[in-house]
Image (tube, rainbow, N blue to C red):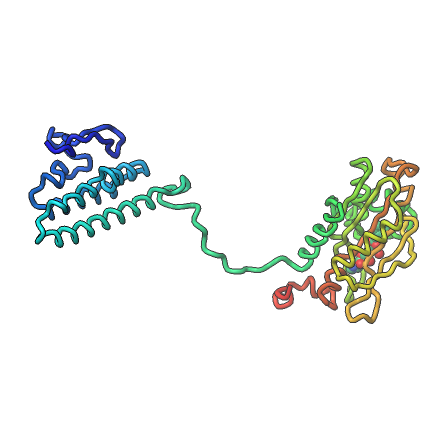
Length: 370
Ligand code: FA5
C-alpha cells in the first residue's frame, strides 16, 4: 500500500482520520472520492481533476479559519500536501505526456491557491460581521449639510483660547433671580440698572439675565478660591437694535480669584486674549469706567475693522470687596479680576462683519462664508 494512504492527518473538523477512510467505507473527508491518491490513479490528468474538485470543495465548504488552514495543509502543504504529491508524480510521467500534465497541474494549483485565498478572506473577518453585514466597513460619506454658526465657532474658539490660559468653563441659567442678577453683584433694589424698562422680567423676582456676571456669583458660592473660570451664554436687554446692538446677544464672562491678583494681571490677560483672537496687530485700549461689582472698573475698546473708530469690546475690573463678602470670600485674603466681553462684536471684528443683524438672519449665503 502506498505510504500516502497510511498517513495520519487532521481533517477539517479537527478529528484524526487516516488515509484509508474511503477504503474502510467511511467516505472521504470532504464528500468527494479521494480514495485514490495521484499515484493510484491510472489516468494522471483525471487524478488532477479529482484533486482539484476535492480541494475546491474543501475550501468552499470551510466554515472557520481553522477549516481553511486544515484544507490548506492537506492540499497545498509544502511537505505532504496533495499538490506536492501531484507535482512529484511528474517525474514518472512519460516524456510525451509531461507537457499536458504540467499545464493541467499548474492550472489546478492556481485554482486551489485562489480558492484558499478567497476562503481566507471570506472567513478572516472580525467578529463584527453579523448576519453577513460587516459593521466595521466605512459608511457612505454624507453630503455636506452645513457647518457651525460663526457665533458657535467663536464661542468654541474662546473656550479653547482661555483654556490655554488656565480657565475652565462654568455655566449658569438664562432665567435668573434678582439676587444673582443684581443684589449679589452689589446692585441694590433702588439702583436704576434694575428698572423694568431695562430688563425682561418674568415675575417680580425672576428675569432673563442681563449679563453673564451672574455666573461669577454662582461659581464663588460653590467653590473656595482659587478660581479661574469663564462662562459663555446668552443675555437679554431691551436695547434698541442697530449695527452693534441686539436685544439678545452673547457674553463671555471671566473670573480669576487668588492671593495677589492685580489689575496688571487683568490687563495682561485681556491683551493676550485680544492678540491671540484678533491678531498681533490689534489695538485695544482701557478706559476708566464704573460697574457696581468691580472697583476699579474699565471699559475695553478695540479698534474696529477699517481702523477708523473704537468699538467697546467689554467691561472689566477688580472684584469689589462687597461681592466677595456676599459669597463668603474674605477680601483681606484674596483679590480677583472679572471681565465680560460681547461675543457678537468679537466675531464681527474677527471676520469683518459690519452689522450684528446678519448673525441672526440665518441667510445661508451669508453663513456659508464662515
Ligand atoms: C457688562 O455686561 C458687565 N457685566 C461686564 C463686566 C463683567 C464688567 C465683569 C466688570 C466685570 P456691558 O454692559 O458694558 O458690561 O456689556 C459688555 C459687552 O457686551 C459690551 O462691551 C459689548 O461688547 C456687549 N454688549 C452690550 N450690550 C450689547 C448689545 N445690546 N448687543 C450686543 N452686544 C452688547
